Length: 273
Image 1 (tube, helix red, strand yellow):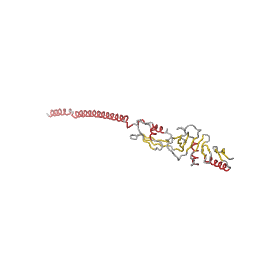
Image 2 (cartoon, rainbow, N blue to C red):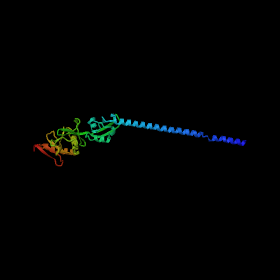
Image 3 (spheres, rainbow, N blue to C red):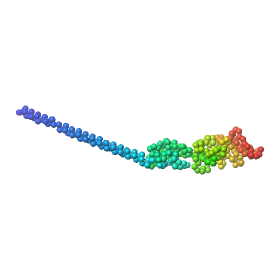
Image 4 (cartoon, rainbow, N blue to C red):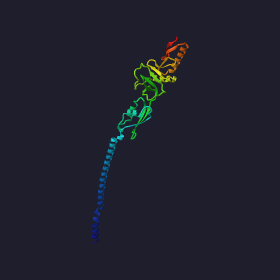
């Protein structure tokens, strides 16, 4: 009996061992995890779709909204030039800010003879384009064929913006036809000679310029004086004063004194011997 009982006990244990309850739970867990993955993938698709829609809306606003098109600019450093002139030089009116190239805008502004340098900054509204301009300073006034222009230290022609009594005026002789062009640049020798003569004779109302005789002036004592061009005006003035003193001491009134070549100056007498 004991053997049969043992057999029965063994037989009774066997089904308990064969029941795979944990296995059933494991199958249930796998089903739940699979469902979670499917739901997560669907959520990411929705998020991706919303991101695409949002970016599309941003691009639409960016390229179609009028606020991103250039209708005005901010300009600093102006004294002679106006904001409207600088804006016209840029060539970016009604252009989308995305297409504005700061390098190209700067080069366009530098075409103005009044502008020495410019800094261009492109950003976001409201001041999408900001420009800081450095203007050239006039050195003297050049009057030719009745038209007055400014000349800077490099001899570049500038538009005369206002009356500057502090600047010496150079009147070109009638032998020069037509006004000086905006893209013209005077020789350095003319610029340096003008400034030196003005420093030596600051009270002269104006200087004269002749293509052959160079720079000169009407002496208040009644004759013409010519000195050519260049940086040796102090030497020429010293020679000029020596000639004048000699002539006047001899009772000779000169009509013209020419010191264009300091090694060979000459004069013409108005009267006297």
